[in-house]
Image 1 (tube, rainbow, N blue to C red):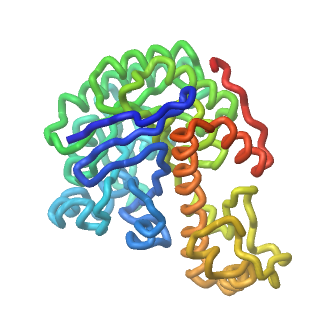
Image 2 (image 1 turned 135 degrees about the vertical axis):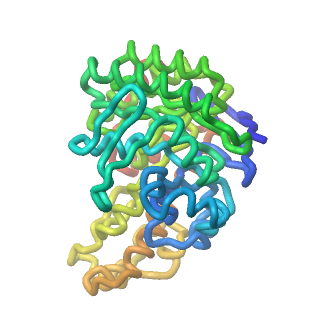
Length: 373
């Protein structure tokens, strides 16, 4: 039911296919984030037109509202939100651990205060799996602890808890139509990341994720950590870098062997009047765009760029029209989805390094050399 195959390699980079009950995911792939069973400001039909093949929804938020049991009664997440291609749910761990002032960790799980109504809730490895089985995504995630990446002592404690919880997630899983991915933790510390990658990869998960990055460490530390982990993780399973999604991160991540990326950034920037382009970001609130007849990006073929001018988009923003967020979300999502597709094409063609250098040069960003090329 779940099958991973590599179609081409270029250095550490891979062009792969991951088969799921709801379709094939071609990698490298960028995953739009639909936190509350919706990718903000876009419809499923628009996502399909953009060529999205995998969408992420959030276990923590759906557990609190409307409740995973309600979603199950409505036919599962695919039916509930009318997205019929592959779907991924995270475990809820990152959101719980970001509530640093309102949660308590113990060996069994986490007790936390709901951000909606202040009521006390609890997540354990077993309940996270049960919730994700109710939601019914194709790919589900083990319950982990995301620690401060710069604190070695805390990172080690969180990593050890993550390993224990990963086994409990495996033991709790009942459905065979969902692929459970394990998560590697350990901050930016080579010894911890190596140990975590060894432990997690020994457990028999069909795919592996790298968690706890892009949470305060610098880019060089993040890329070095990816190299450390991917040197240990098996090549014959997909690799997912969680919560990372700038254009340069996609490029540098793929060069280091990452297959799957997700991030809220494209739709969040859209709601703050910012367009992502192949040459950097544009704040369309800027008065310089008031009479600009050009599209956001003249190289872009998304619906927004084929149809509307920067001047019109700025007008929508100034007038506080909701359409602004939709049109900018369409464009920003297209930018990352198309970048991932172009990275795949470059791997298949054997010219990834040339493509990466040219794409980073357009962005005005220097390539960060691999520590272990």
